[in-house]
Figure 1 (spheres, helix red, strand yellow):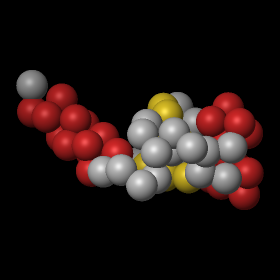
Figure 2 (figure 1 turned 180 degrees about the vertical axis):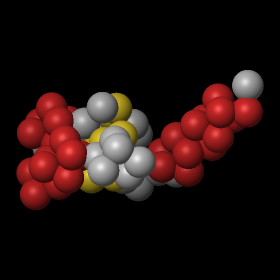
Figure 3 (figure 1 turned 60 degrees about the horizontal axis):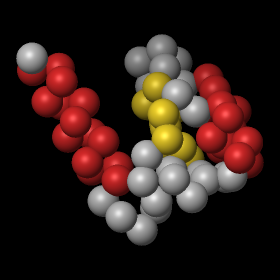
Length: 62
């Protein structure tokens, strides 16, 4: 699971976020999902996932 990235926003996603190599909760996620996530990004109705992935891609090039 170390090479898995997971995005979630609700209590039912908490275990997935905890087990993933990189667990990312949305800004509007439940408190439990945020607690288990490695990162919290913008809300679900924004391009937050695309922005996050672009940031990761740029940081890997450097």
